[in-house]
Length: 106
Picture 1 (cartoon, rainbow, N blue to C red):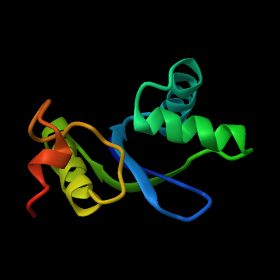
Picture 2: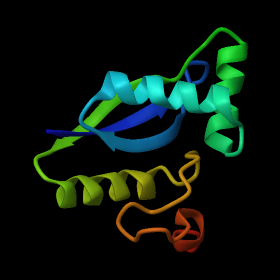
Picture 3: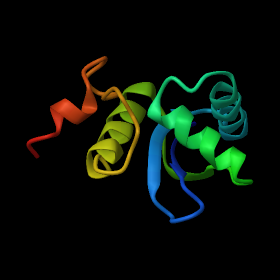
């Protein structure tokens, strides 16, 4: 089972990142570890700021899928619906294309 998840800012309830994983707890720990090691993306800067202020992202499982293709489609759809607030860089359905440029005219 593949989980499509949202990382939510606990201070205001805004969705800031959307991803997929088969191991939610491990993936959340990885996001936090990555943010502690480097602050080279908006997502990592946001998580680092949360940690510095005594918070951490809230992970919510928003959907599940049985295969990678379906998971990627669902993840992409969730990114599209939340494009105004997320820090995702790439569109899961369209590879390395910048999600903000792809959807800026929607």
